[in-house]
Length: 150
Image (cartoon, rainbow, N blue to C red):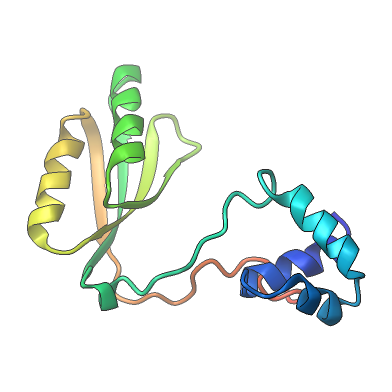
């Protein structure tokens, strides 16, 4: 990736709805080049176009991060299936330590959370830590501000 690629991606991170003509004008890169690069990024570097939501304003007042370790390979497969299909999982990641995961979970109420925890426990969780999010400080900001990468 060269500086032009990063500039294009930076603009898209800030506002993916911005027209390619505007991105071209603001980066000094010809619009045909911006168009070609964005099309080349889609399905590869750009996984999907999406929007960031304020979950609390939608009535989802419980957000927490759950760190979990499963017992064995079968439990690992069960957990991955659960994380891929469960509606309350915002993001989930497998960590470098074997059989360890972190989940960003969003719930409307404690009843939903309790139901999810029951399902999680059915995956033979060996260890679990929960941390409730009290305030969002920054979200999806990496590469958003070109030139400020440190």
